[in-house]
Amino acid sequence: MYLLGIGIILLLMKYLEIGPVTGWSWWLVLAPFALAVVWWTWADLSGYSKKKAVEKMDKRKADRIEKNRVALGIGIKKNAGKRR
Image (cartoon, rainbow, N blue to C red; front, side, top):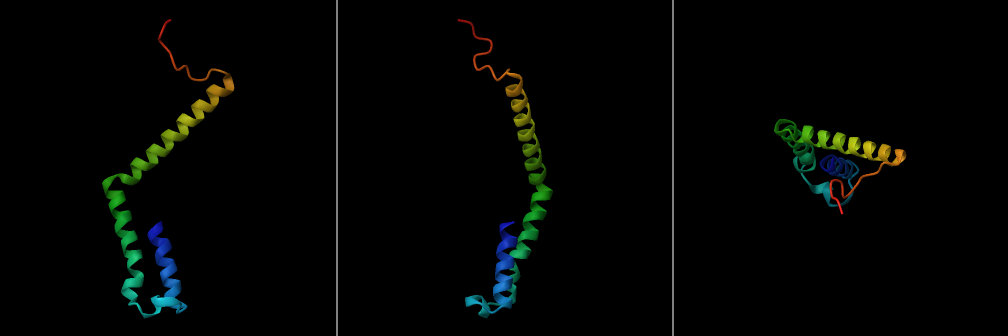
């Protein structure tokens, strides 16, 4: 996402002729978009995207379970299984 943001900003600066970007080559201005495509391709092929999605779902599930335990008054026992 950062690459897309940078690409859009550079594109607008080039189009509106703002700052030093005016003198840059169009290849340099459009490079962040190409890098974003490369990043997304790598992320999908390597399983990085799927791993992050699973981690996000697991976190939401754990948060939901904890919220329900607190609502029921159960909470988490820190010393479960230890006797005094």
